[in-house]
Image (tube, rainbow, N blue to C red; front, side):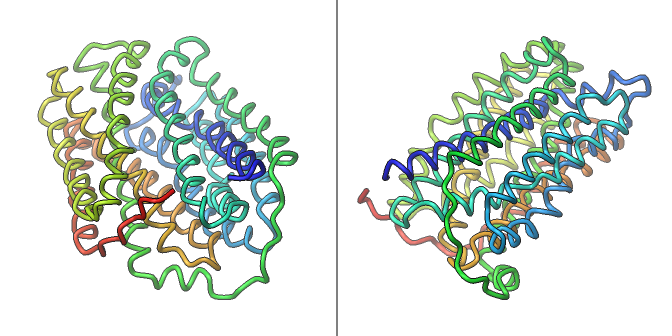
Length: 389
């Protein structure tokens, strides 16, 4: 990479991580936080608190990705960061479930993921773009691991409201970075029909369906998991990091070697399908072994090995399939699918929790990757990646 490309990748990865770390940090503590209000949340409201952010993101990723193709990436990203910060401050000052839901909704309106990814693609040459996307994904992965592990600890120090305020401040700090450190890349003349071409691409929509189901599964997991650790295992919220940190750190170790091996040896389709099946198996084990701490830890470890592999493989597969002339639109559909999955998973998880408790939550979550197997089974085997650098 050139020095300018390295700087651009580093700044955009940092912006992405700053924005996402707060979102992930509240994930393992939000369900318990909703119990602290004067009027505790219902099971459905717990699901909405986790999922409504994804609904707003899903609604706006496509139009904002499309808009960034026309007016430029920078204005879309800056406005999105400011809206996201405003929502964080609303959630941080909330003293009721309704206030929390409003804040989460406004947070989701700051939908910049597609524009950030498209900006990164604009600013990097074709031969280094895969590496650039991998760095962006790695930054998000590190944010994901640290946030889930530190969320219960930080919540114990400054409260969940404090995490929201901290998230808003981080988003505002990202604005001057975007304004000063990332170059504006001239866009080509707008081309009509971008979204239509994306929707008509069967293989692309197969991957979009996969990311939808993957994030629906994760949303359901984090409705049931914190409650199980507290109510069934007897582990206080402040000690949940003792489960999350080692599990997440160990789960990331095999992911990148496995992705490289699968790509270079032409085994991506087989490993991809196996990872989807592993998601279903581990969630089924969670549904059956909720009172056994060893079963919970083993299930989580295997779940996150599969999750991290799929989360890393899908952007690579999308980037190969996405039309070059419609980067913003294609990545907008992908991001919308991702966040819509989080919303739907949150709602289904909340309904399942009210109906049958955490067993129903995990059983319902296991059904989503079983549906995914039908989509993944028919995927085309990707071309074997070149071993050259």
